[in-house]
Length: 166
Image (tube, rainbow, N blue to C red; front, side):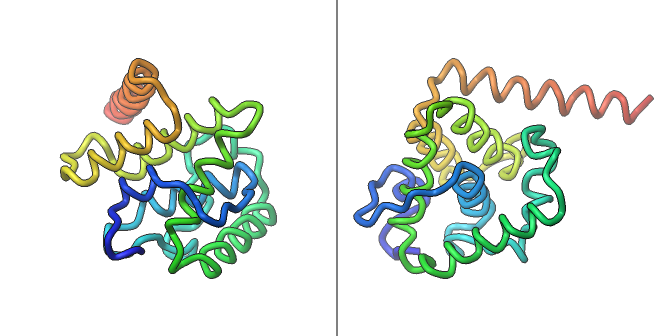
């Protein structure tokens, strides 16, 4: 990762060499970036397998093992090629989602994925809070919609916990 840029600064940036990424690749890259700590920059799918990354996201329920393997290979290739250029890779992932016809749904999926990965029901560091806010803003998710998404996540987790207790 750029030694002078934090995760929140990277999501706010613009790419000098933009990449055109498919939605599932962009979402995967943002998920792996969210899962990494500030010093790691981004992690590979061997450290956080794509099926685990997408666990609970209905949009990926129909993916086969072969499709996940192909996606993992593609994502790891992009990471290999851009590991030292996250200032291009991360903004490219965001801009790839923003220019889609159904941008809102894909941006929300990327944001929810980050919330789930970072386990927002735990206490977050200031840097993690800054990152989530910067990601929300970069993905153009309004504050009221972000609150709705957070509430939905907590409601589902609360309901799951109640079912486990019964």
